Amino acid sequence: MSLTSHQRELADVLRELGWTVHRRSPERAGVGPIPTTELVLLKQVIDAPGSTVGELAQALGLRQPNVSAAIRVLAGRGFVVKETSPKDRRITLVRPTELGRSEHEAIADSWAEPIREALEGISADHQAAIEQATEALAALHERLQALDPGGAQTGASA
Image 1 (tube, helix red, strand yellow):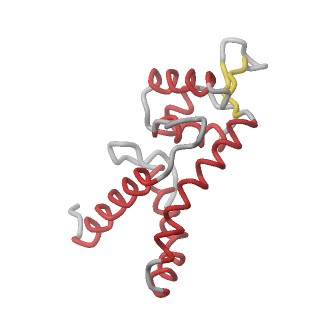
Image 2 (cartoon, one colour):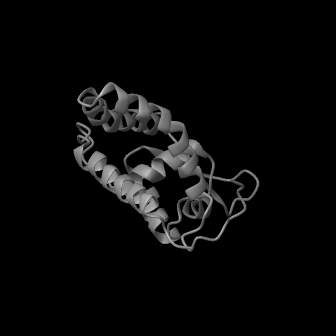
């Protein structure tokens, strides 16, 4: 199945938009830059507290050793804690700390600020279209997460 020109244009715009937002987001004072992998991992831990490293890796499509290394860094910063599973002492669960939750909120706010500023400089029609597209883009994101990197479905429905 080939892409339509509109689908390709959408993919290009989303990629470029994501990069621009990431690049324009200010560093958090006192924390310094946090690599993208650690940012997305912190959000995943907040969204799914008590996950194992393997579950986090699978959810994000990352290699388990990379997730383990990033979890060590996040734990070192006090953003997550590792706990032994009460059901099986061989299993380690990862949970966010209050510091991790508050840092995630501060990061989300810092990412939203350049978008707020940019929205103020575009037409009301474009602002409304972007607001209306938010739900559809969230559905697109959810569907993309349900597909593995090779494009095969992982069991989620459309």
